[in-house]
Amino acid sequence: MPDNIIEGMLETFLGYMIPEQGEELWVYAQEVVKEAKIKGATFKESYIDKAEIYTWLAWQDEPGRQIHQAIKYNILNPQTPKVQGFINWFKNLYDL
Image 1 (cartoon, rainbow, N blue to C red):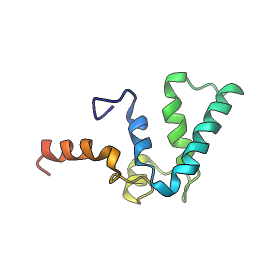
Image 2 (spheres, one colour; image 1 turned 180 degrees about the vertical axis):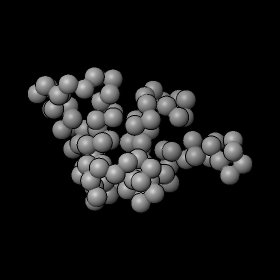
Image 3 (cartoon, rainbow, N blue to C red; image 1 turned 60 degrees about the horizontal axis):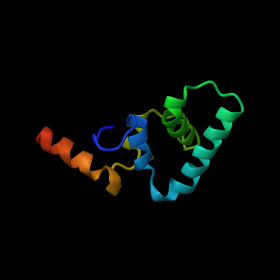
Image 4 (cartoon, rainbow, N blue to C red; image 1 turned 90 degrees about the horizontal axis):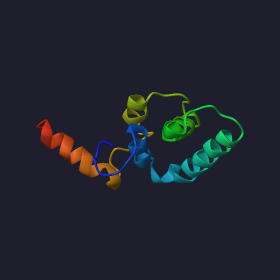
């Protein structure tokens, strides 16, 4: 993970950028992905976080945006408290 504390991949970290108003749909996306796996979805178990974030993004206006677009258009919110440690470290590292 970008914060070197929590296990996972980039998509795990992106889950922390889900805005509060999208939280209920985020929980539902996670449930749907688990159910899809039970019903035979062939993604690797290690990619469950990818499946969850892209499922949630598919349900946004407009569906299928790439990650950078989702951040740019505030679909994902980089200002949430859970990601601020990484954002501050990154800005400090690159003098931004």
